[in-house]
Image 1: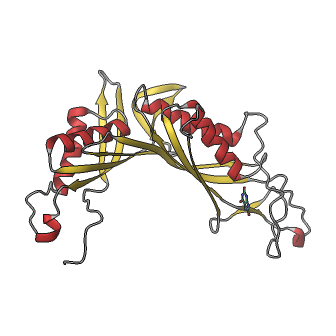
Image 2 (image 1 turned 180 degrees about the horizontal axis):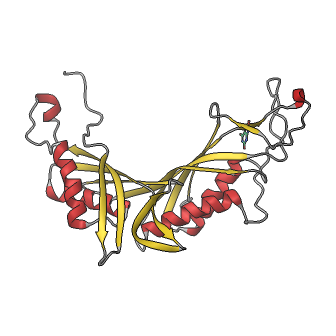
Image 3 (image 1 turned 135 degrees about the horizontal axis):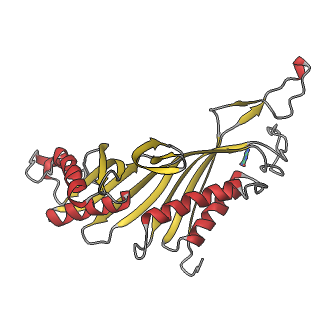
Length: 295
Ligand SMILES: O=c1[nH]c(=O)c2[nH]c(=O)[nH]c2[nH]1
């Protein structure tokens, strides 16, 4: 068609599942289970325009490449595997102009027997799901985002929400003390890969969010709102990991309503609550370092 132009083209294979076993000698083994999505942009549009498939690296080939690189390069971290895939497609095919890779890692942990890590037996502990997005244009450096999602956390006190704006539609009373539940999503960008340990950085981000949410073990830390707790966690992460230049977090406010038992003549002192999945609040903020910041 004469009066249209492409604004983007990309194609790839979604959800390539792979379990990589690193055999470390004897009975000691390590695993990484990944789900990988690849996406390529080519320098011509002849496939879309004319049905000329001669430049297409078939999505089936992309899937096979994921398995082949797992064999030849190994799988150390999801981020490094994403970098390896970007490098492979850009260095193998001069007509590939952009590679994007999404990797999600299944949360397997070693089973502990009598307090001791097992050599080769694992348990799924879905307390948080780790993911990353790696993309690289032909002329540019790789850009790595990492993140965590589905981290469901709750605390039964040391949370309040008071002093908010009131209008004629406001019915919510001030809460000096409430139950706070959320499901954390966070994604951050590494501005440099120099001196970066992807596993260590991810673990710091996760534990910082948990520490900010929970506070010290016996006393906790008061949360004035989801907004404040979310922002404090983001700042702490930027403070601890210098390679992270920007971070976003989403924390829904998942409600647990106190059941009214006054009609049964019972006084419910916030001991019996009703979890409600919908609706929930939804709080989001993205922050980045100011260019002059030395956070
Ligand atoms: O931490 C909160 N932030 C809000 O913006 C909000 N709104 C609301 O109804 N409850 C809460 N809690």
